[in-house]
Length: 443
Image 1 (cartoon, rainbow, N blue to C red):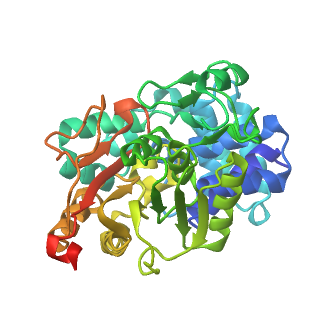
Image 2 (image 1 turned 180 degrees about the horizontal axis):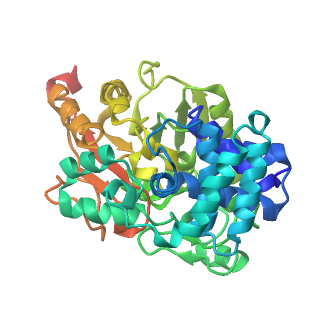
């Protein structure tokens, strides 16, 4: 029987490549189901994410050892080959012989061993010839990002910026946490966390973790001293800049990280309504707010596109559903989505933004954000909103000390890229609802 680590990685990869599962959900579930020890779980996770990140390179390398490279292959068999090839190319501590043998055992357990000889032959040839593999010819293989996504970025950001973006997307994403300033300070929290924890100059009370494993298992998490949140998301909350005592709405709030940071910036004074479409995700927000001691956060089920608009708020945040091209370092399966599947997103995003505008009081602020790098979902949506909503005007974002990657971007928009300060790819825009005309105010 194959070792649990490889079997677990294979089960998780099949769930992603065959059933379009979300990487973080399927690997966590697969590890729990297998009951792996921490060391085996770490290996399964490393192989799983490594194969997803390097899939194009692996498939190109494997093709050199196939008799019919363009012939359609069973997806489970392909994943078995990818797992072994990844170990041989990228995990120096694992001997080729072990990678091949474990792959053969996985093949023996699949479809009555029909592909056992095939897997054994391909991988033994791979082991003998891998050091003589030619350099990748295509840039999509070189960067492990499909050409359609590269072309999209070139159209939106130009060749020079896209080259920097591709290089940044080939690095591993850092893990960032947010200090709960209601309970502790960054200095005090750093003293309790593993060596390598460091403050991030770009955003106050943000910390980076290095080699700490699961951050929710660290000292202080259960006590509510911090929550996990990417740096770009934390910067977005700084741009929203809610003040103590204000009324704030987060209309697409789950899993709650932005709501928590906003509430902490409000010093837990005022009211913050965190909405989401699904009850289970709303319960997740409630549990997180309770752990952090954020009594101003009230979570409820609401459809951001057509839910009730009975209240008025000082600031409203719309972090809308998007294609996710800014977070492919954390969710590598996103890079393989067909860009044609993004076509319907701008209409939904614009609908959410228009509907949420009714929640903003006169003189109040409306913020739009995504975790994607795609102009059609970012600047184009904001521009369309302003054209059809004369009651709103651009609001210049407070970019103290923050540099821009995208040249000539207007003051009310900001595109954040991984090479800027290490966070995910993100977009933010600010809008202000004009004060009511004098005749309207006096009635």
